[in-house]
Structure formats: C-alpha cells, structure tokens
Image (cartoon, rainbow, N blue to C red):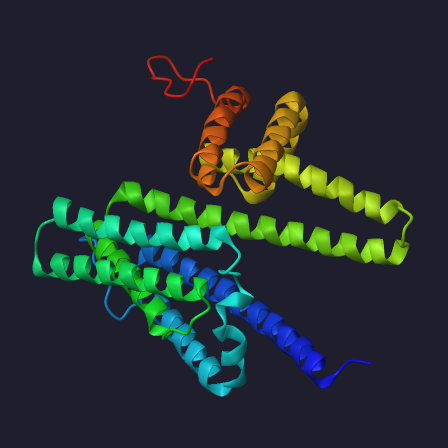
Length: 335
C-alpha cells in the first residue's frame, strides 16, 4: 500500500516516539530518585558543623544515583547507534525554520547567559574561578546563538555547540549551591520547588491520560457523542478549574497532595465566579498570543495577567488563612 520510502519515514517517526518516551521516563525516574536522596541527605546526612557525614549511607546514595544515571545514558548512546539519527535532528522537536517561538526562546536564553556572565563579573568577588565562570557563560551564549542561526538556516553544526551552555549552567549551579547550601531560607525553597515540579508533572500526566482516553472514546463512538466522551469532557473541565487554585494552595499552605486537591476543588466551586473569570481570561490571553498579538507580547502579557489574577486569588485564600493571635502581625492581605 505504501512505498518503501514512506514506510521508512513511518518507522523513523515511530522509533523516535519510543525513544522520546523512554528518555522522558528515565528522566522522571532518576530525577525523582535524586530528589528523594537529596531530601534524605538534608534531613540526616549532615553533622553539627553543616558538613556531610563521611562514609554514611545517606551521603553516598545521591552520588550513586547520579553515577548510575550517567552510566545508563552512556550505554544508551553507545548501545543503540541507530537512535542517534532519530534524536540528532532538532527539527523533530522544534521547526526552527518556521517557529518564531523556538528562535525567540533560544535567543532569550543566549542573552540570559550573557547577563549572567556580566552579573558574575560585577556583583561577585573577582576570583580566578569567577572569571573562568564568566568567560564560560559568555562562550556558552555565543555557542547557543551559533546553533540557533544554523538551525534557522537548516545548516549542519557540531553538537558540542549545544553542550557548552549546558555545562556552563551546571557549573554555575554547582558553585551557587556550594556557597548557599546551608542557608535555611533557600533550603525551604528547594523543597517547595521540587514539590512544584512534581505537582506539575503529575498534573500534565493526568491531563494527557484524560486526552488519550477521550480520543479513544471518540474513535469508538464515531460521529455521535456518547456518555464516555461527555465524562472525559467534564473531567477535563474539572481538572482545569481545580488547577487554577492548586498552585496557589501549594504556595500558601503545608498539606498533603490529596488535601491540596480537595481544597482546590472546593475553592473552584465556592468561588465559581472567580473560577469562570480566570478561566475565560486565560483562554482569551492564549488566543490573543497565538492568533492576534506579536510574539514579543509573550514577555509581558502573561505576567500582567498573572498579576491581575493574584488580586482575586488573595480574596479567595483569605478565608482559609488562620486568624492571627493577639499581638501577631498579619502579613497577608486583609481585604
């Protein structure tokens, strides 16, 4: 039915999908394992002076996880040489010759690296390590701009050009962490950031499962709408409404995931006018950005809309905040 060339393209796309799913699964598994190992290390892996306990199991787990992840990555790269062709073309991820957003993100990333290099020179102590890091960041920015230009023109370029900015950011992260690892304020934000990332991944997986199930229900029903399709539509709507309050609840309260989901669901019903207004406004902002406004507005409009949402969200969250005790300052909005 199909020619050999067409079948080869189908096999390539199918193989690319499998490789991409496998890479995402390994990334999620090793990220979760590393996060748990790090939390365990922060809890019991340091002595009274704030230094890691030598030859302790909690101290050795995290390096072991990272080493295993690196070994598996190397084995996958060497064991399946045919997959390098599938993952080598960036056009399978982003159409740089047609996507203005992809080019914009790459250029913004380059200027962010340049800004980081300048800040490192101006606001940090001018040690040898700081000078090397600044130069490394600047070189990474140049490599990223070079790769962006090559991808835009569909020209070939060495893959190491994309590795340089990644190594520069990893080095900057390691140096920053070494300097601020014992800061109790930042330690609190580490846990909250990991919880935010995990919640985002779980929410995306749940939405993807609903969309996949709805597509199967639509294929089974044909042109007529049946109860499973309507059920999936309702679940998607409830998920979107609950997600509006889920992340503000995470940032304001300390509770388990089922409790956060329950409270967010109750809030989306209790403050239904707020929910409808925020959902309609978010949909309008997305429609304007994709179809009407220039791409540069993505730097301003989403942030302005999120700022407007906070005024409604504060009024909703205020009713769930504990009342301050006598003499205690109430730091959140009273209105």
